[in-house]
Length: 337
Image 1 (cartoon, rainbow, N blue to C red):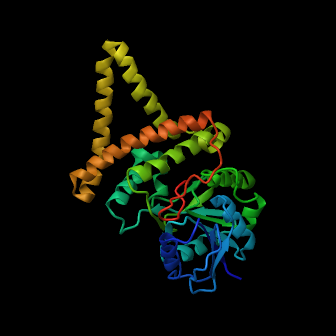
Image 2: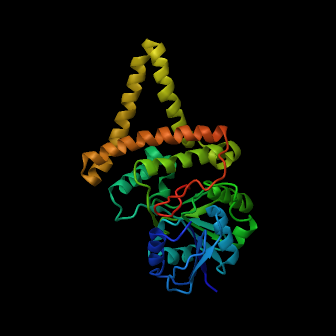
Image 3: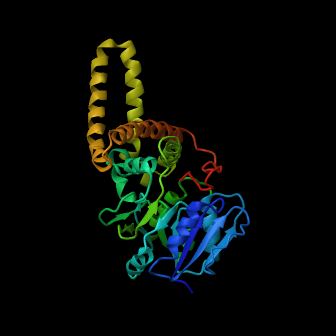
């Protein structure tokens, strides 16, 4: 029986999944099986008996993962998104960490691919920046070890027995099914689980600006929803910050129109915001050696705060309908969570 069961949900076989499988075949730990879960029957052959393609029907990624978990034979479930691929030592590093029998789950960073093109790299810089991701930058780049209570399924390990004890992924949430799974696991075991930077995968970013902002909007709406119904891990100041910015930006503008004396103070606050964001953009300028890159980063920060902030407020006020709303018809991969 394999040690790991790697599970990848996808609408249909696409180039991202093929890339992921090619890297999985090169892992230095070969004690695994793989489930690629598609909507419909696929005739594609990965030329490896350990790699199984199963069809689930037109359901969300959480339900696809649950189906594969039921069929799996591994002791540890290793979840990847369909547009991510692992570092060569991904599983061998995880094996050592799970030697501690008290560990029931494990998360690792999902970094921007080293060969990413320009539009994808800018999105990566945004995710890696504290001014966008707040205290969760460790999800997007390797940082120091820590314990966490909320982690995305792009790079998440869970012992199969622990997964079964909490009932797997909740199918009524997407995006956010991974947040709820982690909440259930932490509640069940009474403690957080480790994040380790050595358990590394690479995750393709959505190109700026339209695909990226669609994804950010879904993130904001999901987190707003969870801040309302699951405050344990989502009612945190950093998640409210973009909404506070939205209220300040538009509220201050309206107030300035009716109360002229307020306008200089509003203008000064905008200038301070621009200075701070521009200062952060120097890191991008240094890496890319391009003024355009720095400008796109500044523009991306502003639009991220607006799109996330507005959708966070919508999520708090109204629960989004469950639907397959994160599907890229061109690539065949999920873009929601």
